[in-house]
Length: 228
Image (tube, rainbow, N blue to C red; front, side, top):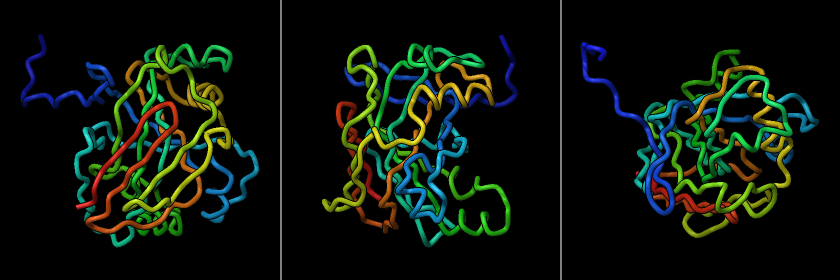
């Protein structure tokens, strides 16, 4: 046994529909994976290679818990996403084999300190403090692919205080799930417990303290949090 000099951190985990929990190793996020969102962010939606950023595993917010409004920001934005959970890893995964690496799916929110992100972009600096802050990744229940299959189309939608803010279809992803897994596996060695947030459709906007966010991915599940 390792003799730790301080208590080791607990393992981050996402509750599974029907019982149990999915342990989380790393959280990868795909940027600008819907053309209309790329346009609203001022980018060319042509099929450029995907790019990725990360969030810490302990940024996950589970069980519908409240999300605290983050410090040092006056522009907190929602980004509704489908989340992929891996049960197998590897490098140079082929697209044709990618889905067998998937354990399941969840609905999630990539919350963003847009003012910090925009300032970092302007100065050519990393996005980390705009994306990877505490409690920046609310997530719903994980559901196994063995039960629901592998969603490639269907509604993805977010309501804020009951009003629709984002609505689109999974089929509008620029890079689909097998392509994303294959490409990412050429950059890093993927492993069991990795999550991939697959990008957000158009309609991202600011939220305030007290706002209730309720998202759904058809055939997968929901995510819910209140900004406090």
